[in-house]
Amino acid sequence: MARYLEPLAALDGIASRIRLGMAVTDVSREGMDRTRTAGRDAAPLVVRSRGAAGTVEDRTFRAVIDASGTFRSANSLASNGLTLPGLAEVADRVMPALPDVLGRDRAVFAGRHTTVVGAGHSAANTVIALASLARDEPGTRVTWAIRTASPDRVTDAETDGLPGRASLGVRARRAVADGRVTLLDGFETVGARWDGDAVALAGRRGTGVTTHRTDVLVNATGFRPDLSMYREIRLDLDDVVEAPRRLAPLIDPNVHSCGTVEPHGYRELAHPDQGVFLVGMKSYGRAPTFLLTTGYEQVRSVVAWIAGDVASARAIELVLPATGVCSTDGGECC
Image 1 (tube, helix red, strand yellow):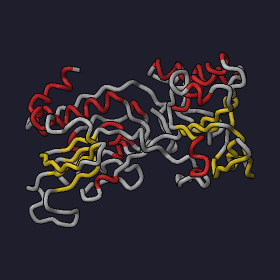
Image 2 (image 1 turned 60 degrees about the vertical axis):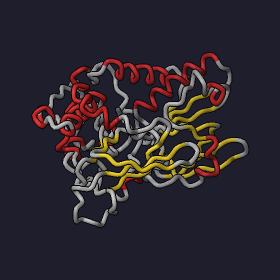
Image 3 (image 1 turned 90 degrees about the vertical axis):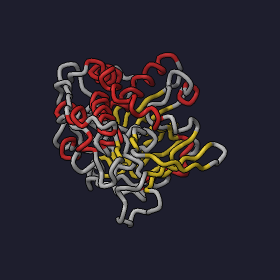
């Protein structure tokens, strides 16, 4: 880990200017919006942040590294990616991905019927926790709703080079096999509404539309980047993946798995507005094939470039596990 942190000393003065308790809301160039070109590269970046009391601060920087991730920006429950019709009506029964089922959120699920929507590893984590809860809490029921015929992206030890992740597949499949979890396969969610005190989830299944009743929904359909803070910044993003254009071909989930991503750094992460970098999961846009090791190397390269150590920034070293299990049609994976 020390190798990743070596260049950070040169940035201590920059990092210390961000105050705790302030949330970044916008990024721009000082004195110019997105349309202005003259003098753009020489203008410092402006970062606007807002405090809990509504206090707004604008501060200037030479570079911005956005490692804010995508966890708070979930994909839609609807299979077409649009806002699920009826979602606002039942929103208080919808939980985000990876709730603390056996801890602080236990009361939400105990003794109730929960449906987990999504076929990836976030979904598998929640399914396993709910299956455990069902052993201890009478009346607790679990349904796992997926678009495909089987949760193929949740793998086992024979096909996954990451042992910890492989165990998720083994345990999730065991929970389905022993009846603690009901698998609702081939279900494409199209709407939701109240049905008495339950949520009625409408979905296409086969050639028709069916209704699935549940008490609680968990949205584990994956994530997408929130780019709203960059309306005045010139980003160069791939039209499909929403990742930096030079990075997108290297991580396209239709082609690549987690383990087949080529080494990349500051050059692939750069944008037309110099000094702006999206790193980590956010750099992958909608691609779900991200691994933390990749993010560590991205940050090391970017920080080295900002610190002026171009040789180190270009010396990308990335060794990933040999696994071909992360290819997907656009849902959640790693």
